[in-house]
Length: 155
Image (tube, rainbow, N blue to C red):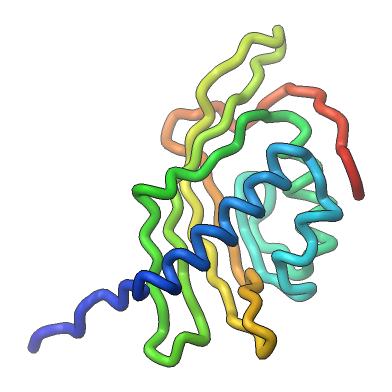
């Protein structure tokens, strides 16, 4: 029995999700937690490099964001190689996103810090996309710890 095709998003949905990702990415680069909050549901469920499972945007900010964003730089998504999937009704989308960043060894030398993310978004009644799940992980062999000391712009 044949499976249904992978539910790739139409061009308009893909453009909306890529825009959402790029705007959120700017918050990460700026270490601006306050500006990043509206992108995510208050009760988001995530797991990532520093946390196995977290429920709530505030807990995610306190654990994952605080341990990663100030310690890295140059976070960017690879939009050309991002796959956006979407439900038939247009109510949910999933972005499969390769990303890059720069990490810092304890002596301050930089190293490439690539990874990937899966982000599930839910369309709100007002048309906004809001993240309801995120899994971000580093590429194989990439050091888990980064030792940068960038200031947090806004909490």
